[in-house]
Amino acid sequence: MRVPSQVIAVIMLVAALAGCAGEGEKGPVPLVAEGGAPVIVPGGPGEAGRTAGPGESLGASEARVTAADVRFAEGMIPHHRQALEMAGLVPSRASSPAVRGIGERIVAAQRPEIAAMTSWLRAAGRPPGGQAGGDGHSGQGGHGDVVTLEQMNRLRTARGKAFDTLFLNLMITHHEAAVTMAGLQLREGTDRAMLATAKDVVSGQGIEITRMRRLLASPS
Image (cartoon, rainbow, N blue to C red; front, side, top):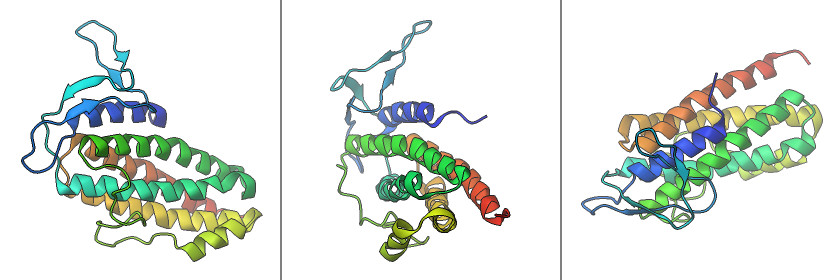
């Protein structure tokens, strides 16, 4: 049974705050809890953890990040945002309960991941908005097909079964690109939090690709 995405997000955010730091030869980076997703501070042996307050200092990181780690986060954030935009069209346009369920799972999984990666980038000295490009694939070697504006416009105007079919086809392509990006991170990255995120993308989106292909192959 897969751990709920909300739980993964909290765990991943803690790992990010514990594992990220500046690039190159920079010294430890101060870590500060932000608003939004809760940050759980582990207690001592036999003690319960607690939730850190916004702005609370969490010490300093001793880890180093590589260009691959930063590139992965800066590429995956806009990629996830496009998936959320696509999933946001589902409730008012889809006719299939299964497609609506996929849309809900995408939102539940990827919104917390965006928050975690955004916090990770801030702690690493890379403010959000500085991501390379806005297509979700910049810096990833240009592989994978991003959903184009023309395709998005077709999705916005589709309804019912036509929407379901187009959404599934586009989201399969979108997920495949994310899996490719995550595979590159697993080969070249070093940061624990970004590696954990990449593994979750490969596992979770791989399962969804299989599920969506089955829906396309099923009889009407």
